[in-house]
Each structure stands twice: as structure tokens, then as C-alpha cells.
Image 1 (cartoon, rainbow over the protein chains, first blue to last red):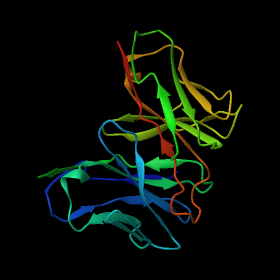
Image 2: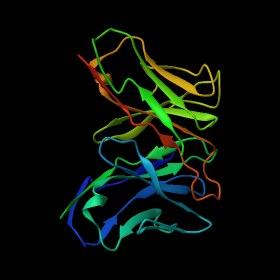
Image 3: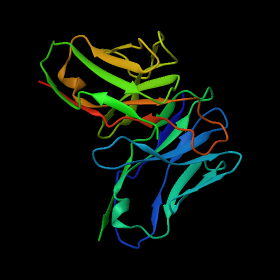
Image 4: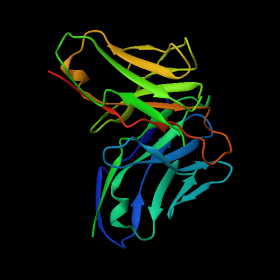
Length: 112
Length: 117
């Protein structure tokens, strides 16, 4: 079955630092990939989406690029702010478009 | 703005008791989902539904039942609650994903924190 792997459980940065979160996936089909963000006390919400058609997603200063060769889609941001502190999940949708498979999440803490 | 609400927001239950978690969506989405979130596991799918009257097993359905009486409502039922079911539960709604629209997504509720003693 489909799977996604996030090895970074927790990342601590200072404001204006560069953010890079790695996510790798395994699927038998051409994937559509998502990054979700979860702020404290809330449910996850869509941050951005990457498809094999566009290979890249950009939203709110975050960028994710899909690399078919390494089956990865990393999330990056040039300069993080304290307000970016949250949990970030990568996710993969199944080939029928119904079910999401989530990674285990990366908790980002940005010190002011 | 898409809206998914859950009730209760917090619940304390006893082992062996019955627990019902409720979810309502005003998005007119066909698909609804129940997940649980645990540290180290991320979000795991318990049950989902394609529409009123349908329920499907997700990845971890054991110990849970689901009910979809209408387009708007989707319930998760723990007939005999156990401490291992202590978790945060999220409901979500959405249409088919994977299309070209940048904003197609599942919309999540605020979560229900369940403690089984």
C-alpha cells in the first residue's frame, strides 16, 4: 500500500532561518502529494499541493518540489517566523482520490 | 469557508462504556472521514463514507463503528471503549482529491479529545 515517511520528528529554528523538511513516499501510481499544517488546538489544514503535472507547489512563502527520481517532496521556506510554529504533515492521496495517507508529522518550533 | 464541527470537544469515558463522537459538515461534500491522531503515528484513518448510508473501513477500524445517516452527519461509535482508544479524533469532509484544482482538500474539524479511564 501507499506510505509516506517523515524522519524529522522535531525541528527547532530561530526566526529568519531556512526551513527544510524531508518527506519520502512509496506508491504504485503517479502521486498527488500534499502538505498540511496543524496549529495548536486545531485540525490540519491544507498548506499546498503538488502534482506530477506541476512538480511544484507554492503557498504562503512555503515551497514543495516533487522529485520522482528520489520519490520525495520536501517542504522548504527561506525565512521562518515564530508564527510558523506548528506541526507539518506530508500526505499522499490514493489512486481513486478518496483516501489520504499521512506521514507522522514534523513539529516545528521557531524561537523569536 | 468550509465548515466541519465536532461534538463533544472533550470526553472522559470509562472502560467498557459506549462512546459516540459526532461530526457535522455544511460543505455538501460527499465524502467524510474519521481519523485518530497519536504521537509517533500521525493521522490514521478509521472509517470513511462516500455518502449517506455508506460506511467503509479505513486502515485501523477494529473497535470502532461508523454511521452516516445523512449527507451532513457522520458518527464514530466505540461500543466498548478501552484505554488504548484514548486519543484525539478528527473528522474531515471532502470531495475527490487529485485533480488539477489547487485547493481541493479534505477539511478537518477541530478535534475531539477522548480519555478512556
